[in-house]
Image 1 (tube, rainbow, N blue to C red):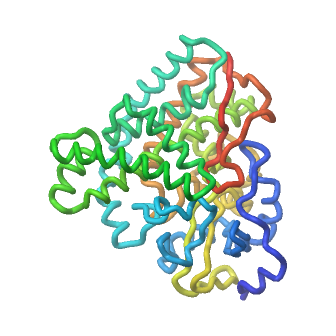
Image 2: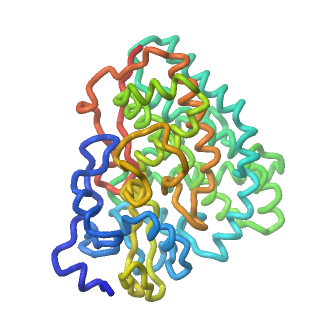
Length: 407
C-alpha cells in the first residue's frame, strides 16, 4: 500500500504549471502522467497533496463521501494565493458539503435541467447572431474574445439570472478581475464589488416581488418564504454569474484555435453539423480549461488503487490528465471530432458536477454550428505562438487575452 511517505521521498513536482500551448497540457505533465493514477504535487505554499490523474480513480473518489469540498476547513488545499480570499472560501454549490449543498442544488435544478436548457436555444441563437452581426458590420480583423467568446455566455447567464443587459459589461469586468487575480486582496476586492451589485439587485427584486429570471423567482418565493436567506441568494447568484460564463468563454476561444489548427477536423465538423455535439465533447475533453476537476480534503483514511489517502490530506483531481487516460481513450492526445462518448471530467463528477453543463453544451453547440456558417473564411490573424495566454500556471481558468481573427 502506497502512503504519503512513499510518494514524497523525492520533492514533488510543482502545481499548477504553465502551459506553453493554449490547447495542450503543460510539458511537465508528462512526468505526472507517468507516475501512476495517483501521485503527489507541491503547492505554492510548499504543501504536498495528492494529484489524481486516473479517470476511473477520479470518478470513484469524486463520489466518496469521505472527501470534503468544504473550503472553510483549515486543511482544505489552497491552490493559489487568490483562493485564500474570503470570497473564495465559502461558496454555495462548489465549496459546501451536504446537507446545505443539496438544499441549494434542489432549488436550482429546475432551471438547469436538460429539458429547461433546450428551451433556451432560440435565445442563444439570437445572441450569437447579434454578436456575429456586429463583427461583420465592423469588418475584419476582430478580437473573438470580447466580440463573441465572452459576450455570448455573459449575456446568456445574465438573461437566465435576470441581470439587466445594460449591466453585462460591468459584471464582465469585475468577473474578469476576480478570476484572473493572483493575490487574495485583488480577488477579494473584485468579489466584494460583484457582491454589492448582486445584493442591490436581489434587494430590489425581493421588494418588488416580480423580478425577472432565476434571481427574481428565488427572491419572490424562496427568500420571501424563508427557504433561502438573502445572503445565500446573493452568493448563489455570484457563483452562477462567474462560473456561468468564464469557462464557456474559454472553451469558445480555445476551441476556435484548436479547430483552426486542425483543419481536417474542422472540415469534418463543417461537412455535417449533426456532428457538432460530438465535436463539442471532444473540445471539452481536450481543452479542460479549468485544469482541475475538483479539490477536496480527506475527512477519513481512504484506500484506493493501492494507495492510502490519510485523513487531512489534500486531494486534487487532474481533469487534464484524467481526460487523456490511455486506459479510457485510444490515442488520447489525438484531437478527433468523431470520438464518441462523454468520458471526460470537464464538468467534474459526482454531487458537485457543474449544474450548468446542459446550458454550456447548448451554447457551444450553437456557437460552433453558426460561426463557420456565417464566416466560412474565418482564420487566425497571427500565429498561435504569439497568442498571449492567461490563467496558465496560476490555478485560474485557462484562456487567451485576445484572439485576433480575420475572414
